Amino acid sequence: ERALWTIIQAMMLATLLWPDLDQGHARAALRSTLPALSSLVPEHWLTADRQTIRLTPEEVWVDVREFLALLAQNRSHQHPQDTVCPECLSSLEYAIALYHNDFLTGFTLADSVEYDDWQMFQRGWLRQECAGALRKVAGYYGCEGRYDQALAYARRWLSLDPLHEPAHQMVMRLYAASGQRAAALRQYQECVAILDAELATLPDEETTALYESIKANTVTALPKAAALSPAYGVLPPLPPLIVGRKRVLQDLKERLGMNSEPRPITVVQGWPGVGKSTIVAALAHDSDIIRAFPEGVLWTSPGETPNLLAELLVWAEALHLISPGQASSIEMLTAQLTATLRDRRMLLIVDDLWQVKDATPFQVGGHACALLMTSR
Image (cartoon, rainbow, N blue to C red; front, side, top):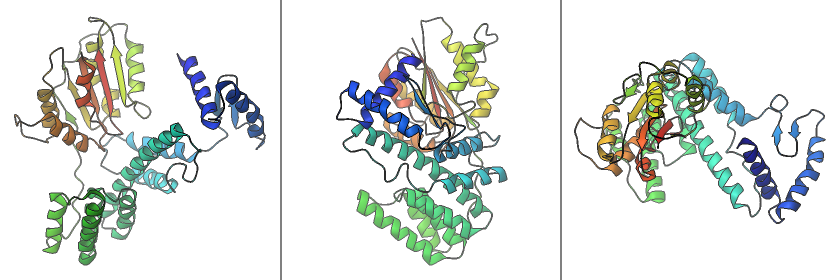
């Protein structure tokens, strides 16, 4: 499977660079170009054979790789993700300094929809990662009373996504806390104008309430960032004994991001009785997983005839989004869960899925979450 994927990647690369040629001629053009690329610098920075092409990590420094490594280092710290320690601050500021512009700005390939789609996805993902780092650093300096530094990071966060109201709110709070009440009120007017121009909508109630508080001169300081306690749904019991599955558990933990970034979705498939539920139950209680996902684990088991609304309500209650037993709709709950999990690092486990469509409501995790599903 791995060999097949590398061949497909080589074919995709050839097609990407020479879209007007057929596969045979595109592969030939790629082969003839590689020697010229390899001779650009004396070091062996490019490694290629008949099937694979890769940069040599020891010889090539890539800012994106360094940026992501710094963020992964930050997430490995043993404290809630919204808490910033001195070591976090240093790595986050360095990561932010590396983000000079959007991914591959100024570079494009003519008439290549595949490349455009790939670049757009990478650009959005990396921009979101940078926004999360800016939010944390701005909050840290704001809580320390270093408002000039906090505002610099907060305004850069806002520039990445001018429609994101939490960024407007932070800038407003920082202006108010630093005694710049007029600037805070102007920031609200900017928020109103851009939301009206781009989305034809009004600000959220929370943003408007903050504006009224600043207008009444009742907001004088930035509130301390509350450390988020780990959230857990109703987890299955810890299996008393697991025999012969050590390698499987280790593989799953690697896929879930124990030592790296988690894969967005991992599916364990097998016949009834092979131990899928036992394995994921063990993972839900595993100490390595708890360290990798310090903000908690949410678990559910829909089964053959699921009550999706009830299962989502359990997750919503665990995250304190609603009161126990409060009725809602699937659409409303998925929207609330998606917003809440946007910047949190949690593991979501959906055990015993029977229908593909039943998985959709549970795909609510943000960029730092992992989703593990089992199905027969």
